[in-house]
Length: 230
Image 1 (tube, one colour):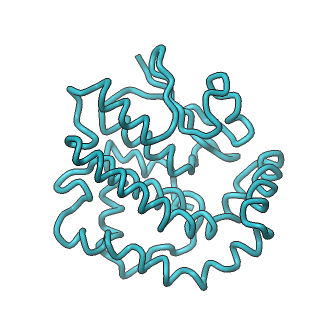
Image 2 (cartoon, rainbow, N blue to C red):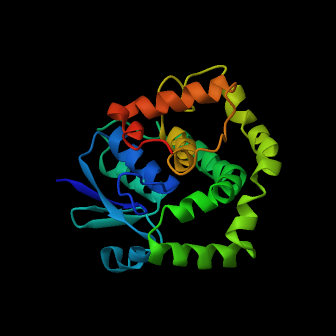
Image 3 (cartoon, rainbow, N blue to C red):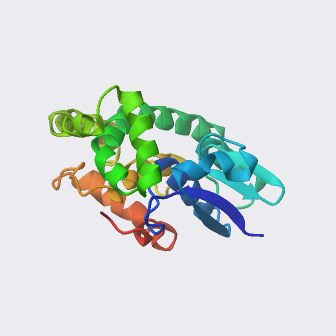
C-alpha cells in the first residue's frame, strides 16, 4: 500500500521546501517504502486528515496517521523493522534527537530568516498574505527587514556548521559509512534553502559540507535532486 505524505509547497508543486517534510520523505525512501507526496499549501494544512496536526509533514499509512517528522521516523522504524534502519539502535535514536535540537536551535533560525523573502515570493497571493502576516507577527518586523540582516549574520551561521565539518573529516555521513535519520535532519535544513533561495548559505570552499550534501542529494535515486535548486 502506498503511503501518503503531505508535503509543503508554494505555487510550484515541483518545489517542495519544508525541511521537516524533506526529513519524512528521505526516511520513507531510506526504508524503501512506496509513498506519494500530496502537495499542500500553508492554508490547506489545517484540513489535512481532518485537522490531525497544525503542521506537516503528516503521513497516512493505511489506517494510521502520524504527524511530526521525528515521530514519523520512529513510527517507520517500529512498523517496518525488517527494512533498513533509520537509527541503528536506541543509541542512534538518542543521538538523532541531539542532532535535531542542534539543527533547530543553531541552523533553522538563520536559514528561515535569511530565505524569508524568497519563500514569501514562492507563494500564491492568498498564501503569501498568510505567510507575511504570520511571520511578521513572529519576528516583530517587516519581512523585508528580516531578510536584510542575512549578510551580517552569515559568518556566524557558517561557524555553527563547524561540528558537522569537523565530523566529516572522519566519515562520509553523520550516520558513519552510510546515512541515518540524523543525516536527513541536517539535509532537510539545507535542502529547505537550496530549493527556496540562490543565496550562498555554504561557502564555495566548504568542501566537506558541500560534498556531504551532494552525497545526500544522490541518495535514493537522487530524490533530493528531483527538486531543482533555486
